[in-house]
Image (cartoon, rainbow, N blue to C red; front, side, top):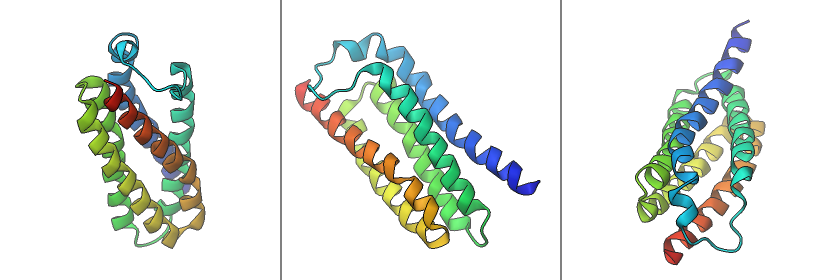
Length: 152
């Protein structure tokens, strides 16, 4: 029973981070974001929601696989710092419209994702592998963020 509760909490916490970020995103996607010049490789807006829901689910699974191990306090702290940075990007980019600051922040986020992956690998290799699509998507988002900054 304890593992089921940890599983549910892991998934919900990660999805909650996504919900927090989406609060800032939704208000700008239909207005300010539409007016920005974007590169030709910018995906359609409808793609972002489903991709992020899936990535937050994978993050939740990775969190769960580590959380059920012993002596993982530092790994969990690192994960939650990373999750804060994840939500912060939406606040900076969409909420405050600070495109360059968001670019700098997403670099920091990428570094923290890599650190989480390295740390998680020590406890459960699956948890690291589950984060590969996430770091790839954030790598793409980093390039997209920089391109939007340059074009505007």
